[in-house]
Image (cartoon, rainbow, N blue to C red; front, side):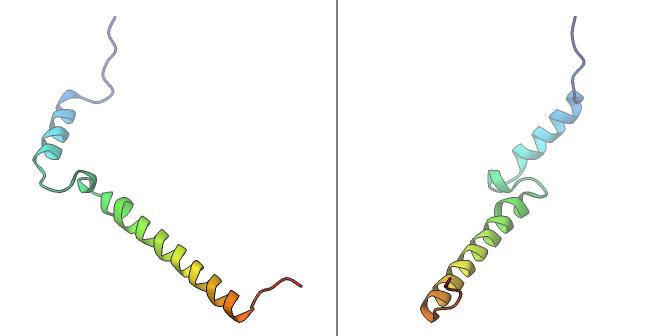
Length: 67
């Protein structure tokens, strides 16, 4: 008893050829990979640095202290 495949074989072969013939880095081959591999980490880094900068500013000026 054999199961039918989830995806047709032709589709898999077509995708394999596409990814093997592309001349980009492995992590940037898909259509949305630039968003997940570049934009999201840059956004997280900028957010973290701005929060650190705000914390340093608040500490140096004595803002936001609990009584």
